[in-house]
Image (tube, rainbow, N blue to C red):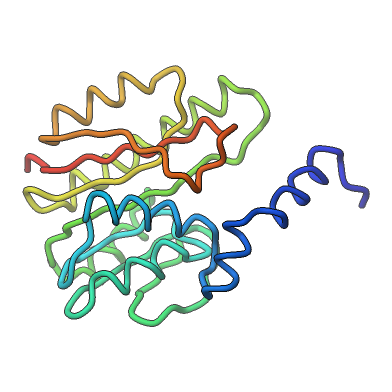
Length: 206
């Protein structure tokens, strides 16, 4: 099948990307790991012994990095609709976390262990329609927040991806009603032309 000009451009950009090369050199599964790595260096959201839930985890870069940060004694549960190859120290559940069956499996794995951090690098499959894609991205962020509200221990943390645009400020305001501190992060590994940012909500009000 012939590639479109946009897909050829994406492939060229991807393989010429310094973060892609660095991820390959360091044995990470995706360039996205460096976004979490930068946020961790600045905000110290992960620590030994913590329990972490990673939503939309495949191919596993964030779980891979987080698993090392929460040693010893930590636990990480990764969830995704897509399959993911096993990772040391990571429990993976394949399924839609919004569906009851997957939710019950997640709770069973956690065994009522309080969750300190919910990570979400969820993004919609982009349609090219900016308003549609923005609405989908906001919806995914809201689902991540709904999950965090049900799992987080008091004082816990949510890190979720969102695109700047319609609905962004309203979602920020919602976060501020549930968390003591909400900050916006744009890691260097986020492509400059992308509207993606990460909202870091700390100090969950249980």
